[in-house]
Length: 306
Image (cartoon, rainbow, N blue to C red; front, side, top):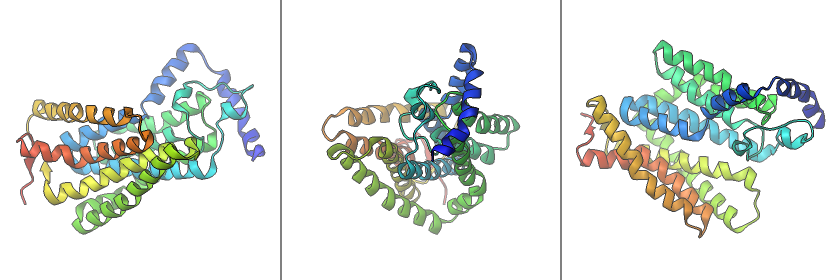
């Protein structure tokens, strides 16, 4: 294993030698575009306000790829470059590099999220931005010294697999009620218990936090999201309509209404990680089902005509 690290080290040192304060600030901005908050806000905007089908594609691509990535992190537990060679590699923006190194979470998220935007939208400017970020965000992780080349390569391939190669399959699932419901049930049945068990283990045992914390979060979010899609199609089936102003209002209300509940769950000290899992599951369930149900009942959204 040391030979694999030493083989990659020269490239890390070369990139480190190119750093300037201005360039580092720019690269930090680029890398921030592959982080959780950006992804969730854009996903919610697309799902509630633009196109449900495209929202489903983005959610499926990101959640399948990130859960896969986190499972690999938990299995391999590769140290980050600045941890393996603390005297040679300086890691920038380390607060975004708390877990293990392989595969790269930012690279996986960027290639799955922006890859899905590339596949889902036909506007040339969206495709250009998306493709640029699929390339730029993984490179930013190398420049910042928080990932090895093998990390970003594998992470990018995982994301590309789900966003590009599996895109047509995900769309076929969306268009078939039988497949849609089957996938929703399978994912929620697998992910929610896993997230709950990991949350309890993180609270009550000495299980490796770096290996399992993000897997718990992503698993809970995926389970809640897919469970919600099942109930939404069965009981709500909301339709995106109305003016841009009305859609923007729905987006703002949906985010504001969820924020206090998620915040409360995440700050209660008792069984902190278990409640964090509940918060992430609730967030996914809120996006895909609870808020659309409330919005339809209050007349903010309309039902699809059957």
